[in-house]
Length: 113
Image (cartoon, rainbow, N blue to C red; front, side):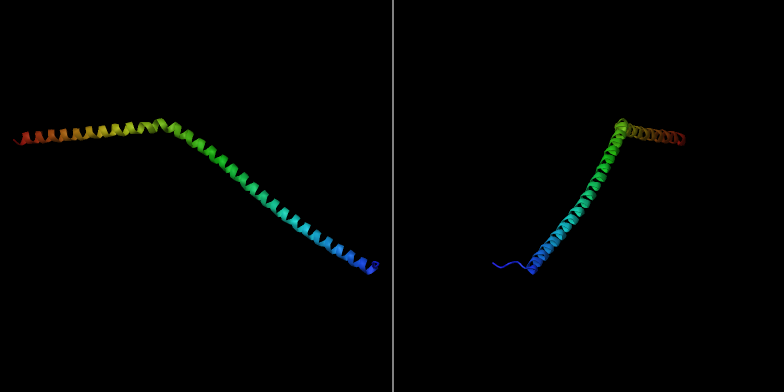
């Protein structure tokens, strides 16, 4: 076996240092990636929180609209009855107009005779 010289030891030391530097670089890259991923997850979490708040607002608004509709329901239900009554009144008006026209025509015809 040959004995180790100072040059051999320096080369081994440099090799170890180079490997250590590469490992440190890799760890730094991995740490950077993890930090980037953490930032992205934070952004996603923020967006989910915003969406959750908007959904809550929509539910509140929906409840308010539903309450208003429930308040208006009796009036809306009466609309069909009112339209039916208006239709009946219109028929009575037509009947009254026909009777008045007939009466006026008969009065004129008796005056001209």
